[in-house]
Structures are given as C-alpha cells and as structure tokens.
Length: 129
Image (cartoon, rainbow, N blue to C red):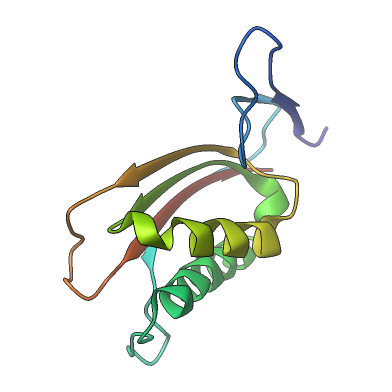
C-alpha cells in the first residue's frame, strides 16, 4: 500500500502562510532525508543574485528528490536558512513556483551566515513514499 500524506491545519491554530502545520504520513515505504542544498550549480559556480541562488537551491533539492524517484509532492518537511530578510519574497516566490500548493511542514530561519560566506540560502528536506 502506498504512503498516504495528509496535510492538517487545525482551526485552533493560526492558519499557516506557505506551509502546513502537520504532515501525517500513513504507511510510508521509504523515507528520504536530503542534506542542506545551497545555490551552487553542478559546475561549482554560484549565481550572483539571491534569486539565482534560491532557484538553484530548489533545483538541487528537486534533483536529489528525482534521484530517489520522488518529486516535491513527496516532501513532508523542509528547513530553510536565509541570511537576509530581504530575500524572503524571492524565496516565497520560488517556493510557490516549484511546489505550488502542495507545501510541506516547514521551518524558516534567518541566520548570520552559512558554510561559505557567498551562500544566501540553504534548504534541507525530508520526503516519504
């Protein structure tokens, strides 16, 4: 039996914006954990803009999901690290472009820096199938 994923947002908790409060997974056959993905292209280059890095981080996330035979529909949890609040609108726009309305449970943190000072975003993911 394939996994069932229920997205739950109780009326007794403030409605979420761009994520779900609860992801219930029933009968998962596989669980995939994806390390933090930054905006580095396969050739090692880093886009010059925050928008470019965010798009590349999502491309890396989806490429890792695909390597495991999954799509963003299988994501149950993401943790996102941004180094500047000014990048939030670009992040939200790209998230909507990539994930549509099937968003996972999510935590978003603003941090003072990432592993390389040029990085502005890092996205971790967990998925089930």
